[in-house]
Length: 156
Image (cartoon, rainbow, N blue to C red):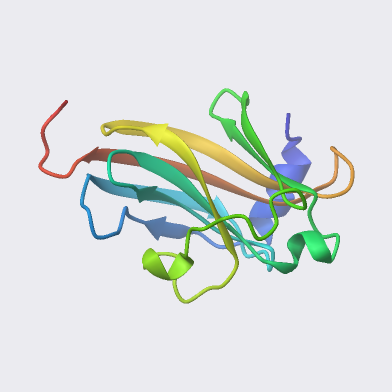
């Protein structure tokens, strides 16, 4: 569980962001609001759409693992349950997602990871944290709330 101090430390140095699901296949229409960020290594978090589902996009600098700034990225849900851990050194240069394909991430550079969230409608609140060498070493955090609906406004 992220301590209040660790979370507020990430928020204090960051800025708010507002994002939407962008791309060529409008499987969803999303709106989101986030707190935190501003890290040179945990660059941006936003919902992105794929061909059939929405994912949580996490953009991390290519230097994060190489410079020892981050061992992993964790994603936790609203209840603080661990959803996934992305080990940065093990996954280095393995993502085939191009940030330029999603205008919310362009023109920033880095490795873009996608955590599948499901078909729209999908809604949630997640805290994404860049973890240093130790599990208690939270280097940066972003808390993101979002709502994604079917592009045409219908329910499945």
